[in-house]
Length: 338
Image 1: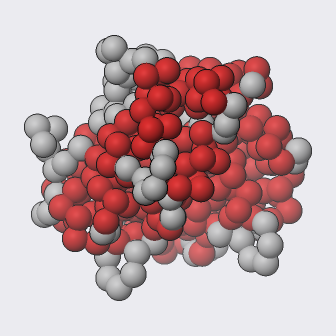
Image 2: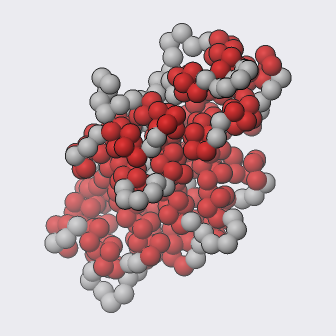
């Protein structure tokens, strides 16, 4: 439990000083024992009161949920997550388990699942590795080592290949500048280097793209992309699509999107998980749970602007039953007043 507390502190430190625009906030009169007793009552006897479970867990922060789980164990000698999983089924069970798992542990488990067995889910690896901050990645690395007794960097190296592997290892090294400082002269220099490494040569010097995209702070990258457009006469995304392919292209584009607008990046991920026939529930749950305390309000705005429909409305049309209720409860409706 001390190790668990340590990497939760690391994860929360990554949020210090940020303007958080999530939909889940700490409860003013939070009482872990009161919530533990209520959850026990919701699971007692015949039938399960899913509405009560959703009402409590969708309105508590990750740290508060952890405190509820600890109090539940103290009061009843039972593991709350195990008890919830025994009472719930399907996507609702998966979403509740995601809510009850500390973010670094959840990301670590997601990365392990993306790499173990036959084949590698590079898209999921990109979503996590290219959007998390240094302290978050450090916390994920610690959780990965504790839960699986494996080294994340070693697994990334063995399960990915080529220049994409080097990009993931660079990000895993946590060497990105995370200040908000913008140096216009440096941006011009970097933009010229990117142009020389791609558009202005036969073939692409991926090492230059890797160095700049993996180490500059996101505000600096936005200025670099602005300068790049003036030099190249096209935006950086167009050049990346022309010069790179496959997972490397997807990784570069994810970093660009994260720098320009993380809210739009995750809005796109959520839309893609629900559009058309079938739903990628694993991705949808991951995106909603992971962003609910960070920037869900900005994501809702980005979603509406780009797709001309509210995120909660889109979820309601795509996800049914108590599972849909939980996701909408986390999103808190299409507007902050819902």
